[in-house]
Amino acid sequence: MAMLGPQNRPKYPDYETEAPVQRQFYPYADNGGSVVAIAGDDFVVIGADTRLSTGFAIYTREQKKIFKLSDKTVLGCGGCWCDTLTLTRIISARMQMYEQEHNKTMSTTAAAQMLSTMMYYKRFFPYYVSNMLVGLDTEGKGCVYSYDPVGHCERATYRAVGSSGALLQPLLDNQVGKKNMLNADKNPITLEKATAIIKDVFISAAERDIYTGDSITINIITKDGIKEESFPLRKD
Image 1 (cartoon, rainbow, N blue to C red):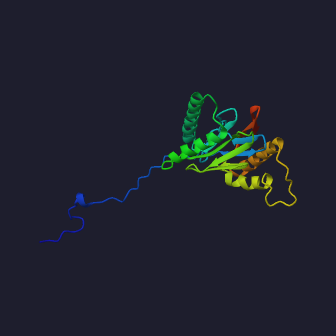
Image 2: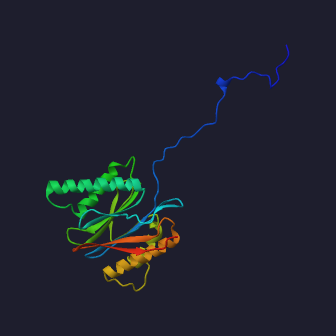
Image 3: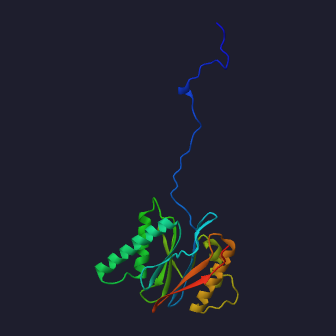
């Protein structure tokens, strides 16, 4: 019997295999954004940029990332925008339920604890958001609460989170915390000084971070309410 050559050998399709194909599910998107807050004895100043982008594409240059929860409480968010919208909608609904049930507005401290519980509840599929909740506590003092993705909460007097948080936090440590400074002024920071520092750090962030730019929205929280300002940044 003649031997079959390679070109004449029968093919068996049942035994042919393909290269392995990897399937991935990644529902998150990083839309950038940075949030900075500084608290004083009787005020809080919080600022967030207005650029909403992904990669090298800019969706809009006028997206506010600061959400008013009450007359003394404000939430700043950066990261995945769809998670931000979902989280803020749920928080707003829960604060309305609290007000209708107890006939009073939820305090900043209670809102901070509620947000921590909400994020911990979603710890197995967390919100991809950098949160910062600020306001005046029951004694009228300014407070800043920052969070990790699973709800760990920390109170501070100043904080920077978001895409340029790692760039801005050392600058705040020096200018606000007076760290690594000789003969530093130990007097409490004033409202005008805190507002000027927030503008300066965002100008620095816009030079180094492509996800931060266009302009910043600033909310000033005092016993008289919330005052909103805006400040332009570079748009390239």
